[in-house]
Image 1 (cartoon, rainbow, N blue to C red):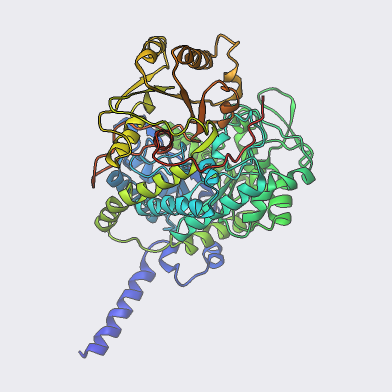
Image 2 (spheres, rainbow, N blue to C red; image 1 turned 90 degrees about the horizontal axis):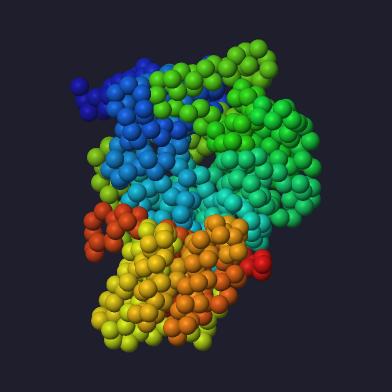
Length: 617
């Protein structure tokens, strides 16, 4: 047989083997999404519209965090043709382990009757909302906006995207495009870029560009915006009583800006009674409640799709959150969401044992029954699955993966790379903002000076040492300077911190404010606020200057006005160990508080501009 004849024969054999493989995905290169969906059953379509979470396994056999896929969960993925999975910190405990887990997930999906791989999603927003144990956290959205440089958001999005893809993920549930125009917001805060919708639009679009540059799918959230609430939809049922015109001028500005570029949009479980007037009798209270954005055709179809022109995939926020699960029957919320033109139902059932798998089956069967009875038109499923498959094809989700060993080696080189950490550091330093104290900063340290760092919790105790090591290595601070870090999170710590003030030459007082309510030191419950104000007064009595470092909500800078200088850091993440020099596995850490210490002690000038108004008192 000649070489040419042999080549033709081999090619024919390969093509024949592909056509004999089970599943639609074997012919993905030949079929467009419309053709694939036309061959799918109702059950297969419904499966593609559900994104689950397997955070832990507490059934028969091994118990604990789900860090490897057991046979029962693998069978559920395959049997139900599930379209997506969301992984959390419990699932992602190491780089190699995470790559193996995502590989197991996709192998299970390929054994389904369709053979369609899954969307593997994660909340890797950056800042303190991160899930990877060994990745680069990046400084977080408000810090990115504080730098004033759009390129910093592109860089941060690119780092996150590159690590996502290396670990086997394809979707990031980010960026958060909520405009934090309510300082009392309990859930958004520094996850927002700003209280200015145009700033959110600018930096949100840049972050999306960074994700896309690395082949990661973006999911803008929480549409139409969670920034003007004083209730957390995880635990309550928020309401924003604004007209559509008002929303168009504020909350919707960022979503309108990215409607043609983002791949996905995640909905918010918030009532907008001036936009969606249809009501539902709450199973919790027995009273009429307005349909939230997640379940609202007026908002999803009318505003997002028709008015803003978004034609990508719409995903709910977790359907297990109290705003939905406490007020709506599961089958009713599923039906309303699908009829509103939502494509992906996120975490509708808790799955952590055999009972959870059965509950998931019943949930899927319930949707199938509504389709077959005509309550939900099958055309709605077709539209959604076509969007999902189109996105999967665009980002190569349907394509074969590289060999597992190659992907592990690649991930070990990329995830938590010193190169990315250095870029993270430069952004964090640029973000540090001086609220007051131009005449005090930087603090000059003499030989043998003692720096006292008072921390709001244990997790930040190593952060100042990280900064001091860098300052001493760069020759900015004498090697004889010593550091004492004390947490004032309990009574013993407060007493120790007060005593340490006397010996300190420099006092760096770090705060972590998560709500405005905790800043009222007339309330005996607000022990942190009471201590901070007392510590400032005690330091002044001893003739010490106090540099306050605001680690989370920057609004506390306007409350603790007696501090001699105040720096805003925008991210309260600490570190469990000091990063090793050179190569090696680096456990994730927050760079912002170390960057603030670095700036306070003369490593750099504060360059940031606060992206939110602080005149809230």
